[in-house]
Length: 306
Image 1 (tube, rainbow, N blue to C red):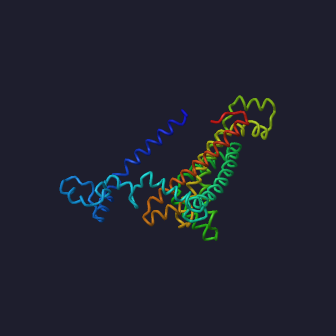
Image 2 (cartoon, helix red, strand yellow):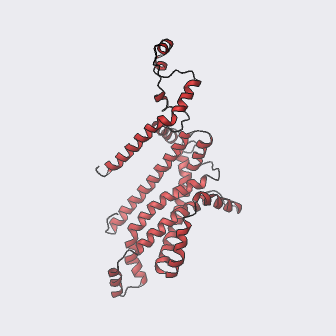
């Protein structure tokens, strides 16, 4: 409970700031809507009270502050509006429906997992080559670092158009973008992990006349596990971002990215925010699953989770 208190405190502060920001962000829209609907807001003068005396109590008690939290197309949706949209699109709609956030989550998640698998395997293999081959260390590692300076928003359309020109569409282009983002954290983490054994441990292996393969499986790989899992948790989140970015330039009809586009194109920010929170919740679940696997794996290896 003590470990959760700081996290809950930060979340509460964020939601308090968000709730307070709704009023200044939406107040002009609220005033315009009140004027169009001939609603007199919060009557203060005796003349206004007399004019509204025959109207309903609800209208007489209308507050411009309260209206900012219930606009259909707000600049900044309130937390309860986003929560209501999440509930409606998750629990009140069939999972196979295009209006269901679960349907969109699965479309994005499938590309995320495939891209994460490709990026992780490639990153681990490249890290092994970098650690055991000095030429790769001096030549490949700088290129891996340089590759991350290319903005993903510029790279994604190029990848999708290039692959589309040779007939490759759908899941694979998005997965490649996901793999691109998840690849680098895994490379860096795995290289750091494989190099984590100190000189005394390496000298001890030489004393026992251990081969290179034995040194890898008995010392370097086990020592790299905490670093690997830390990089995998970063990589899975980056992979989800890559899948969403890959959906944006294609005008995709399904996925979190497609849901965000619908909200932007049709002036429905609540839909966009619900998709954003859906993506965040999905990323949190993926990281939680990897954390569980990490704890079990390190526990079986006799190590505590980092």
